[in-house]
Image (cartoon, rainbow, N blue to C red; front, side, top):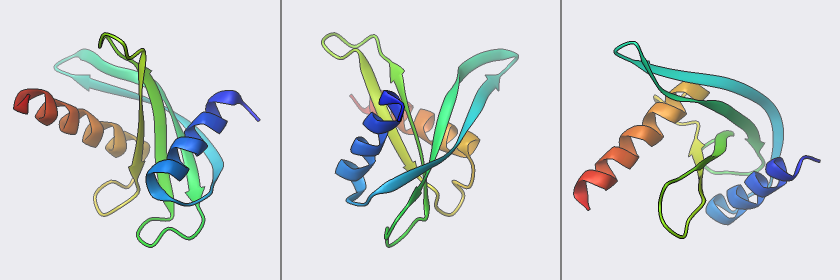
Amino acid sequence: MNQQIQELQEFIYKMHGVQSMHIDRVRVTQILDDDTVWDGIIEVFEMNGHPKAPIVYAWAQNTRKPGKSKVVFAVLHLDQIDSPEAAVKTAMLEERRTHEAA
């Protein structure tokens, strides 16, 4: 098993308390005003026994934050978050809100 997949599964377990199985990987590119604002691979996992979501989208990305080389995301497949693209968009919006609030 790929080390990155294993790390993401461990993160999913810590965040959501359920085991997961890797089922897909999807390249996602987010473009805003003709500029690429995000480009990367999203790993898709099936979750066993989660009460709200059967699927979770997960990825790690590098950060410029001192003392923290990367940040990991695990976004549940819920309501309007129905694709890897929607998961990235939701995470980007949440990061922006968090950054603006700080």
